[in-house]
Image 1 (cartoon, rainbow, N blue to C red):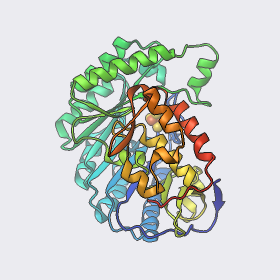
Image 2 (image 1 turned 120 degrees about the horizontal axis):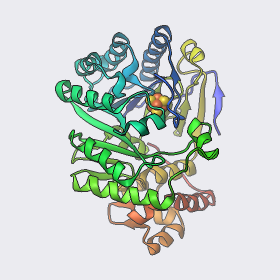
Image 3 (image 1 turned 60 degrees about the horizontal axis):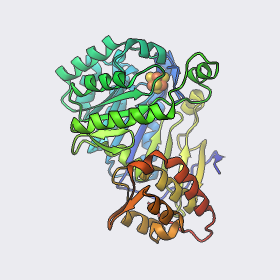
Length: 405
Ligand code: SF4
């Protein structure tokens, strides 16, 4: 259970094997489907105060954990490309001035991607830009409530091709109401023609509380059926595979060596520091536990408070960590390394899950070899029921122990 605290949590020094996420909570306007924390139309003064507080947050975490190196950085949002150039540069320079991450991603949206943005990224050591294209179909972009158009997508991709020397990842959305399989494949053809190293392909999910959720509930539009979602999943996956992209995670495809190292850390349940309003961290606590820390979404409070106080703190139990390890790791094509499970939980997964693993194996939903446990394609389609069964097995174990990270 998470508890609010006004004093800093006790953290275990963790000099190496770190990742940093910075949340930039600003958007031009809210998309109809989005439940990420971001606000529309913030003024410069607000952005400046948040960036200042984020730099302070980076400093405080770095001190508390005695951080000597950061392997990966991800600046997400929100829309980082909406920050004025000087504020973006201030934030990036703080990171680049202290560490040399092997991978450093900044997210951008096509309508706010500028030459200045690209140049600041290149100058400060960013290695990867992730562009939220979503679709090249103007009708669907309007339906989604996106601020950009297909013309913005093309212009941004042209600009990146001309000026950006680093890696490129493109985000697309499928299973949008009225989008056909042929339409989804056309979008992918348009994306692949730009030769990105990485493609993220997300199903549109209906999040409660969003305008799109209300529209579907009121009958304004129909949600795609499960059968059509599976067809889109199979067709798009087969197109991307044939185009040289490996489906290394349920929604993520990469050319060899271009996998997102930062997101792999989340899927492997490795430690990470999160700063910015509404950001989460999973870091080692001084008493040998894993701590999940969450900052407030209240911008005024975020900017006024000490970054390591006024956090919500959750101590993750061994059972919670094991379930999360499965939830994240079984999304990966390569699955979860046996050595990671043995090191963290002290026993093989077959034993930790009682009869559940053998049941899944018999059904053909999972596979295991001498190095890893993974889902089969069929298992990945029924991942939620598998995880519910795993949760039942794990909650019945009172003697579970964990050594993390
Ligand atoms: S741009 Fe991204 S973060 Fe902003 S509202 Fe749209 S989906 Fe949400």
